[in-house]
Amino acid sequence: MRLRITSALLLTLLAWTAMPSARAQQVPLQDKPFAEHKVVLQLSDGDAKKQALVLSVANNLLKAYDPDKIAIEVVAFGPGIDLLLSGSERQKQVESLIAQGVRFDICLNTVDTIERETGKRPGFIPGATPVQVGVGQILFLAENGYTLVRP
Image (cartoon, rainbow, N blue to C red; front, side, top):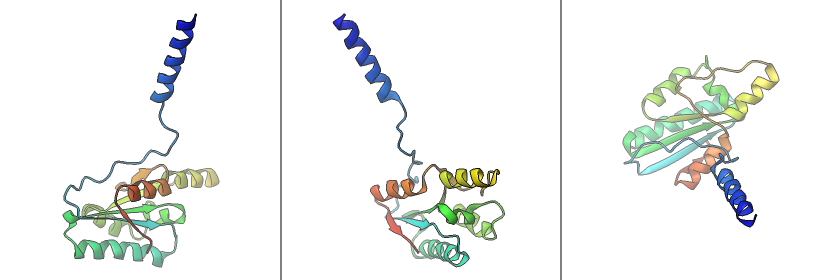
């Protein structure tokens, strides 16, 4: 009897540890092995001037450093995801930065909230990387050597 209980407890423990974590799943770090600088730009504001500033900062960093020597990740959540929605007036600028190695993360929690409130799921720029929790992604990046900048 005791062996059966111990076996059941061990099986439960193994099953529990094999379950996916309830924590937010982050996307892997950028594959930039020669990056000497790592920057995460927070975008949580829907203001067009703020969005233009974030794009300008990313552009300026690419000009100041060799694109292979810097990893830039823009994390958009809340009203900031407007920049990454399909048909955004700055879509071409975003796509140009993506082509130069800048990663743009879009918070799926925000996308889900919009869908619940409007009944329609918004589309986003194909090059944007979906992350479940935008703030969680910022925390993950900061814990992995990225410097947080909030333009």
